[in-house]
Length: 132
Image (tube, rainbow, N blue to C red; front, side):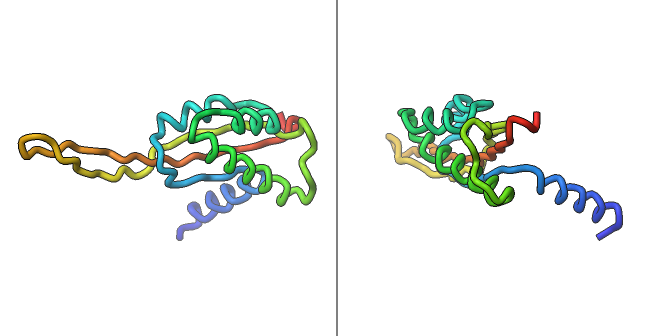
């Protein structure tokens, strides 16, 4: 590894120490459906976001709720204390497309219809209100 590459890698590693996030990779739902849920909680205070996800009818909200709880736990582990009410909020959250499994479904007259089983990756960042 070159010196320049090592220096940028070290800078990136230092920057990650001050960020609090969780990732969900390979979630078996389409990115479009997941983005509907993620858009509901973007920028929201953490306890309110948990309430919204708990009572949402979308199936993807269960996965996002678990991810949000993981991000909160990561914040608590890095800061060695419990999060207080109203302290944390969802600063950034985004959904990327994952691998797509391609399958065939039998169709009339010997043909086959393509089925694309999509997956996604969700990354959720939490931050304190005082870090604005």
